[in-house]
Length: 351
Ligand SMILES: [Zn+2]
Image 1 (spheres, rainbow, N blue to C red):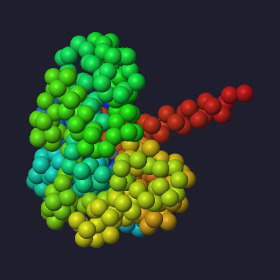
Image 2 (tube, rainbow, N blue to C red; image 1 turned 45 degrees about the vertical axis):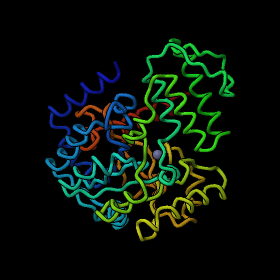
Image 3 (tube, protein in one colour; image 1 turned 180 degrees about the vertical axis):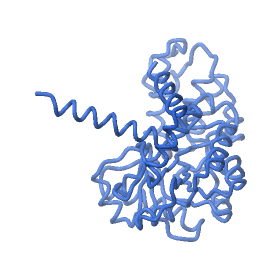
């Protein structure tokens, strides 16, 4: 219902010409788009917000070109944001994680428009070259048509067999399997477990691995993509953000150690894994030589925006074209500002 009201508001605003007004009012704001992977099979139905459909991605890029949004590289955009000389409607395109599908499907679309882009690459699975375990387990549990799953021989604390027709039991068992394996097993054993689960669930794990539905780019692919002009940046090695200084600095140095030899230059832009962060990270990141850090918080970026908490718009197949347009022109941003202003006033008006 809320979603329908939002779309109706956007449609009315566009009809009234308010999208043009918003674009002019927010022309100095830097837009940063966030993508993850592009769907190669049915993983786009499994996680539509993570794996965007190729046609949707093509439409988005064509829209940016048609509407004349200047797409800049991340580093240039940050420098010009500092200097205050960004072109009106300046936009940056980013991809999180470093999915194989980016190199295979998104890169040709970007090249067609001459758009630069940044990939924030997490590197543990780049070095392992196995499908991301927790995601492939969730996918197999989503895809299976099996009614029950026997895990009695897998040292997992779950009543076996698991009734897969019960959504709560299925969800709990899935996370028990993931937590158990991530805590206790090596990557080789996790792959073996994934195969076993695939057999029991009737999902071909070998095919998922061969098609690289949940695989990141190989070191060679990252090197080639960087040579083709893709900007590779940091996203931690193990896709975690440790709270302690030592842990955080290790994540960044391990990530750099894996990436810098491939791209042949120092890396100093960062993206928080899962978008979670806290202000106490800012000083630590600066200490590690980081120039900017991207979040998943919506909004435009102005010279006043904290560089260690850049705003981005997370796009995906669940976002309707009108929502994308509202974000790009800044109307959605202005609406959020108005809402928080009104809410703040209401809070202050309380006795
Ligand atoms: Zn990520």
